[in-house]
Structures are given as C-alpha cells and as structure tokens.
Length: 158
Image 1 (cartoon, rainbow, N blue to C red):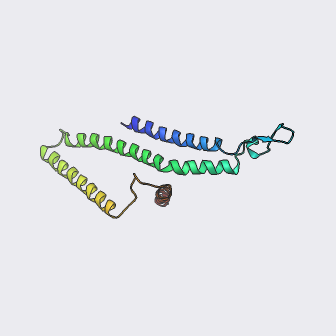
Image 2 (image 1 turned 180 degrees about the vertical axis):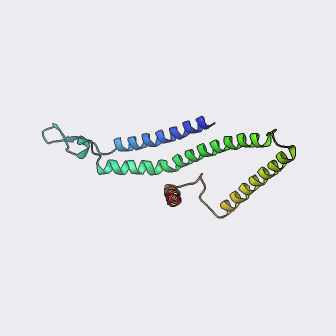
Image 3 (image 1 turned 30 degrees about the vertical axis):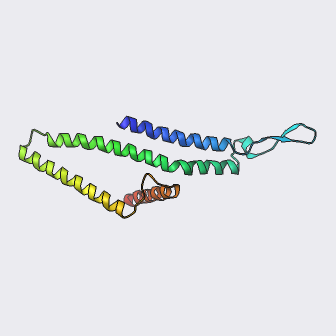
C-alpha cells in the first residue's frame, strides 16, 4: 500500500514537473525573427545562456500553482494509506497480545473503538466548520495550508 501511494506521489510530482517544462518550453522562442532580406536572425535573450526569460518563469510558476493542489492531495493520500496500514498492524498486535489476560484485550478494544469515535466526531466538526475540502482545494488554499503547516513545524522546533 505504501509503495503504491509513493508511486502515486512520484507520478504527481512528475506531472507537475512535466507541466512546468511544457509551460517553459511553450514560451517565447529565441529564434525565428525574419529580417527584411528574408534571412532568419536569432534574438538575443537570457534563455541562450541558460537563464529563463521572464515569460518562461511566469509560465513555470503558473504550472506549479496549478499542480500544487494535486500534489498535496496525492501526498495526503500517501500519508493516509501509510497510517491506515500502520493502524491495522498496531490494532492487530494490541488486540491479539496473548501475554495479557483477555479482559485487558477487551478494554484495549473498547479504547480503540472510542478513539475511532473521537476521530469521526472531529471530522464532522471540521466539515461543519467549512474547512477546505481536499477535493475542491484551490492553489491559494493549498499554499495557505502548506504555509500554515510549515510555520507550525517551525514553532514546534523552537
């Protein structure tokens, strides 16, 4: 499961890179200006020296902006898949632990059931509060969500 999710994340990253490359390649051409005598001349630009033009930079930024929500959704799907597999394994180990009496295993099962209920309740609260849906996430919402997550991780390290 985790390998499939990783492959999906890689595919989304590849799609984003491909879209950015296509957008950059589809920008202004450095060749093709025709002089009066019918000869083709080459326009001098920063692209000749490996430097992207302003138009190419803008196209790449737009392509990445468009790909960001898909990339975040794919990364989230990978995280969910990994968590799901981990929780199944932990649940199996905790509930089938023969080194403790059955009464303890029953209490563990009840605690896991309550934990699941808490997650469902919080999910309903978040949906009612109008939080951003991963299915309708715009580029701006994706950027804000990513920035908020990064700022939170920086605060935790201090």
